[in-house]
Amino acid sequence: MSDLLPYPPLDPTTYDLIIVGTGVPSSILAAGASSSGSSVLHLDPNPFYGSHFASLSLPDLTSFLNSNSLSPPPSNTHDFLSVDLVNRSLYSSVEISTFEPETLEQHSRTFNIDLCGPRAVFCADESINLMLKSGSNSYVEFKSVDASFVGDSSGELRNVPDSRGAIFKDKGLTLLEKNQLMKFFKLVQTHLASSSTEHDETAVKVMSEEDMESPFVEFLSKMRLPQKIKSIILYGIAMLDHDQDNTEETCEHVLKTKEGIDRLALYITSISRFSNAHGALMYPMYGQGELPQAFCRRAAVKGCVYVLRMPVTALLLDKASVRLASGQEIFSQKLVMDPCVNIGLESLSSLTDQQKETLRVLVPKETSSKEKIARGICIIRGSVKAEISNALVVFPPKSLFPEQLTAVRVLQLGSGLAVCPPDMHALYLSTVCGDDNQGKTAVLSAISTLIRPQVPEDLQTDSIAENDTAVTKPVVIWRALYVQELVKGEFGGEISSTSSPDGNLNYNEIVESAMKLYEQLMGNKELFKEETENTAEEDDGDGVEIED
Image 1 (cartoon, rainbow, N blue to C red):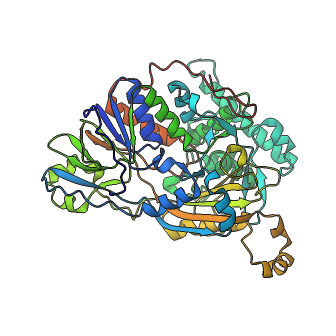
Image 2: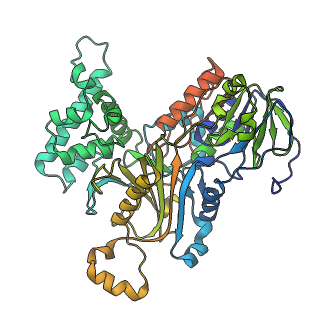
Image 3: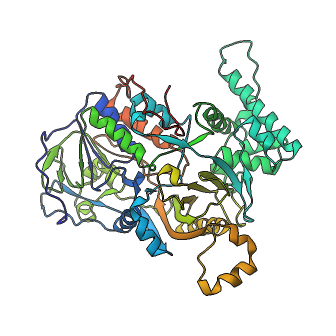
């Protein structure tokens, strides 16, 4: 740690809770625990907030993805009860390509690029509810995602309607399909209304219990919805990853109707929640990294102590303490670690079975059989859809090629969100996968469908003549591909860990895991019970002001 900046000793040296990593779940924990009156020390080995949920410049993003393949050397202590900790990489198969280095060098620090994209929030998302309850909404501004589409290998993008008016204005739907879709949404809304009055004996059950327990795709077929409409509902609104039509191969991922209705309810309630939001989805100004920072700012107001560039290098089992990279020992009975932190192999071999059980959260686990998330980032000149800057595109399973097992989600963001220069867009892609090659193949297929590759100047005329449609596609000027391991958070008593970014578009599961961990750590202390002020910063006219 020779590059570690000198730090004065921390004072105090004892805390109720030590949290390592400033990702979304860690930051929610820090804000919640600080608000409940606990003393919290929040550390991050990185020089920035957000950990794996951060938004970074292109040079910092490249450095982070590559340096995370390295682990710091173990500490020089030989204390039997000292357990060395190492940072293992969550990323594999990292490929970064630069096609216009001069252009990017001029603007390299004007990018705010998400590590865990594509990600957006529904207006009725649990993360928005928590921001309002905690008062963290004062520190972040959102803007609407302009439109959503479902795509295929031909490059056709079909609108995902977000209102009654949008359905009838959609030129891609026949009159029969418009009526079928309206009838289905009306059925869902009637069911939701009857469910909200379930104690009313006069309320009529719109959907039977048998329907609610059946596969959602079968219920949609029962409603006689055509395949095009079913695809929009399953993948463009419910945001499912796995193929729902082949239930034999994906039986463990088949969604029940009651869960599908819950997802539609999130979409429907998001559309009308905020008066100045133009659809169901929003995105934070300056990138997703603003969300963990908002909770960190709230935690700091409540007394949480923050130290960046400070790794934890060892656990001292006999002292209920940790050793920082600075050499200082800090004491706490509760420790929450970043998902990339593990026990060093040398220390692991010297532990007893009982000690391994105590430290089970940090014991390296076999990861070959786990799901992963293949991610892609492209900086492009132009837009994937003319005259639309911020847009979501979903390619359902098998829509790009027959062997495509999971949906590929694509989120395009423009300069109005302060994530890139005015003449460019940031494009995020992701898909859940079982292995690196499978995931990257799907991501690359989506990229080639939407984007025109760089062509040498001496070949441009011939290439354009061969394929006139390529002229309208945006051109890529920078690209990153990588595969991220999916790690679930775990409560381990004195030592716990938080979740890595998942493969979902929104934060609901991440927030739910953080809230569950808070309950396990803090007992019956209500999360953000004392927070009553839900004020928001003044809106500049086109931002979404979130407040109750």
